[in-house]
Every structure is written in structure tokens, then in C-alpha cells.
Length: 292
Image (cartoon, rainbow, N blue to C red; front, top):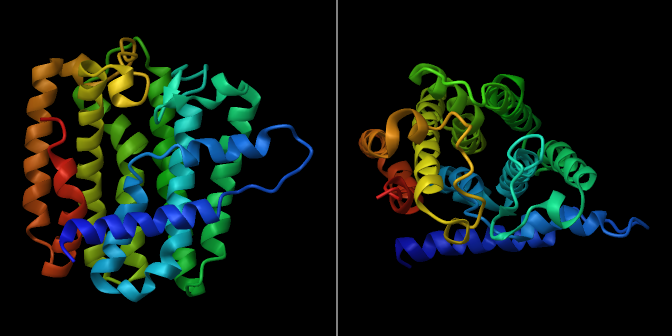
């Protein structure tokens, strides 16, 4: 089986697991359970769970079935962040993953509560995974640190507060390292925790993920500037008041920064041991230069 087919098979396994484990428990609410499932079923790249599973595959592939709840928890947490990011109080977006945002399709209360539910359920998924308690505690610590106050949340708070106020480049990088890159870095580290890579490799993967996440944010800013909402599958050209890399550096400057970070990420990939490098390359090579 060639590399692309291996990754497609892994993604297919994850999609099947997701559909079998959607958080639907019917009550007499007319649509809340449907709303809970909508944005998860809508698709997306599944990038964070696939990063985690790729790391597990590189060292202890037999643990992939046991790792599926943790992969799903990453998708839950990421999806909650998108739902809240799209709310009227934040980006007020109409489209996500090619579908109406939840506050548009249903109502704002439902969107808020679906996000809250997915956030909480993410940690429940880890706690019930068939992994050792020590590993589960480390996974919870990693996800809470990077998805919470000192990670994604402070990044989002800065992003919202400083709309229409120009940040310096180092401040912009701080914003997006926390808002976007920390969860990507955590996904790699959580895979390393599950398959028991040594601490040095865990930290190296985390630092690599930080660079990768920042690259993804710059690429998203380029996509927002250059693609229509229909092409991107989400609301675009909606960043005029935001601190984006395109707004600060211009389109050509953002592309130059993305080129430099893409090269750095490619060079770092070459320094991992052969199994880890090969596993990550299967997933990443089509993404690293997606801005070109």
C-alpha cells in the first residue's frame, strides 16, 4: 500500500469512528442534538487528529484504535473553537466547512451551548480512553494548557480586543501562536505522549508544531485575501478590522513569510528519525506549501 493510501485509510478509520461516536442523546429539545452533530459531520481537514494519529503510527501503530477517542477529542475541541469564533460577538461569519454556521442555521444560544458541550466532552473522551491513567493525565494537562487560558483562549481574547488596532509583528505572532499554533503543537505532543516518545522528542515535536501552526495561520490569511467564500468553504475577506499577516505585511510580504516558514518546517522534518519523518511527511507535504 503506497503512502497516500495509508493516510487515506487512517483518515477513513477516524471518520468512521467520529460518526459512530457523535454526541447525540435524544431529548425533547427540538434540534439541539442535531446541532451538536452538524458541524462535526460537515467535514474539514481533520488536521489535528491526523497529526496526532500520524505520530502514534510512527512508533506504536497498534495503539491507533486506543488513540481514537483522543483524536476525536482534538476534533471536538477544535470544532468548538470554530463555532465560537464564528459567533456574532467575534467574527459574525455565515459559512463554515461549506455550511451555514450554527448561529445562522439555528440560533446564537444553540451555537454557544454546542461549543460548550464539545469543549467539555473533549476531556470526557480522554478520561474514558483505553490508555494508562498516567498517560491520560499527561494528555489532559497538555490539552488544557494549550487549549485554555495560556493557549487558544488568550490568543482569541487578544484577537478580539485589538480589532482595528495595529499590532507589531512580534505581538501578531504571539496572538496567532496562542490562538492557532498551540493546539496544533499539542496535537503532535499528545501523539508522542501516547506512543511514549522521550521528552526531548516530545518537545521537538511541540516546537515543530508551533512553527507549523504559525505557517497555517499565515496561509489562512492569504486564503482569506485571495479566495472567495465558496472556494474556501468558509467566510473570507472578513479580516479588514483584524490583525492578520496580510494586513500587516501586505499579500506579498505574507507569502514571503509563509515561504520562509514552509522551508523551516521542511528542514525540521528532515531531522526526525526515519519512521517519524516518513509518517509526518505522508500527511504534511501537501499542506506545507498550500499557499503557493
